[in-house]
Structure formats: structure tokens, C-alpha cells
Image 1 (cartoon, helix red, strand yellow):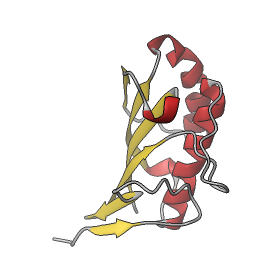
Image 2 (spheres, rainbow, N blue to C red):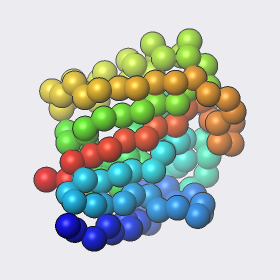
Image 3 (cartoon, rainbow, N blue to C red):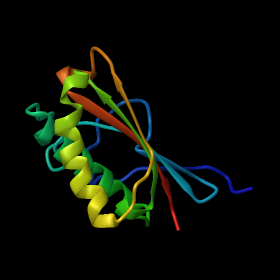
Length: 130
């Protein structure tokens, strides 16, 4: 059994919380929830669901790339939305990403309140490394 490895990169947003950006264990990358944080400045950039989703997905892409994986290896995604009525708008952004990878991984979504720093969404993903 492979020992779990804490993964961190300074190329993606670093929020300073008491957790890692990801854990790698037995070939699976477990990525911490990502939100609307600019990877260049580490500043929260609140906006529309589309804008926040773009930043969160960019941070995910960077973390995966730096860990040796990619978006096309997503196994599952969990999305937390401030307003479940915005799911259709989020889904349009996510559909563009998943269509590029020709994959249809399972998606779980929940409305929650409040989210970190007033954000409209947060994602948790699990990725296969190889």
C-alpha cells in the first residue's frame, strides 16, 4: 500500500488554511475544495457563478498538472452552490470543460449556506493520477 503524500504547489491559489491542496494516495489525487481565488495574487475574486467557476477550475487544472495529472482524469465532482438556482449557469461552464475531455463523470451538487468568504460555489474533486 502506497503511503499518502501531501501535495502543495505555489502555482495555484494558496489560501493559508490548515490543509493541503491535495493528497495523493494509491494513484488517486484527492483535491481540496477550490473557490474563486486568483492563482496569481491569492486574492478572492467574487463575481458571477461563471467567473467564480472559471477561477476554481483554473486552480484545479494547475494543481492536477503540477501533481502529474489532468482534468480528463476526473473520477467524480462535488459542487457546493450558495443558490441551487444557479446550477444551470454553473453546468454550462462545467459542460464546456467535460465536453473537451469527452468524459461524463458523476456530479453531485448541493446548496449550502454560507460558503467561504461570500463565494457562490466551491468544488471538491477526486482524480485518478495515471
